[in-house]
Length: 97
Image: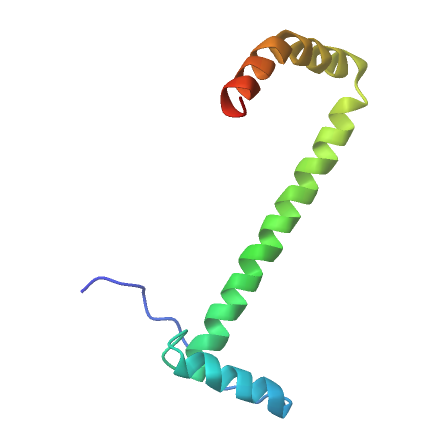
């Protein structure tokens, strides 16, 4: 038997506004998930992936900002940009004649 290993579940109680409950039920009826519980899990997993991606991007942005404060790194990047400018222009002409 393949698939995901069983993960223990815990019962929780939430208070949700009626429009939210109606939205959950609409999504379940549309086939977004087989049940309310499954839908909540799918949406939380999606939100966590988005959150983790945002955190990675923020760390990368911070690292790049720090790297560009290094004058040798910034000079090297400027040189690479100048070196690839003709190739970039040629590729752009091929894409958008």
